Length: 134
Image 1 (cartoon, rainbow, N blue to C red):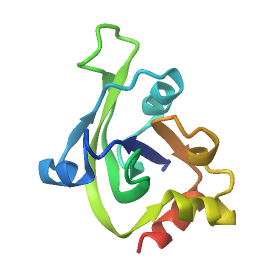
Image 2: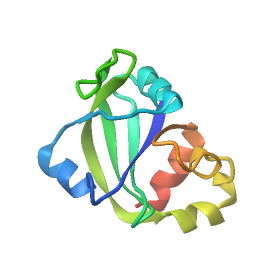
Image 3: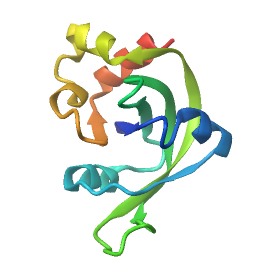
């Protein structure tokens, strides 16, 4: 199993909307590194959902339900999407400030590549974030 973090502006696509819909095609990614990460996602992989820009916090956990397939919003077949389903809300949102202050997370991709919208997490990082959210 692999672990991931995806970012979305809550004004564009929020965790609340995701939970209400029960499933999402994670499309529209137009960064090569993020696309490569999407291509590696497999059903059952766990994904943390991060509200970027206005909230800057991890608010929930999802899982990959369908592996990479051609992005229906793209004219070029090199872009892909995956399907995600919500698993559960975080009891407490894990803020970017908390992440920055935790020495166990000093090498997390969220801090090193802050503009990347889809990023891998190490199992240890995932576990720390999950514990902080409960």
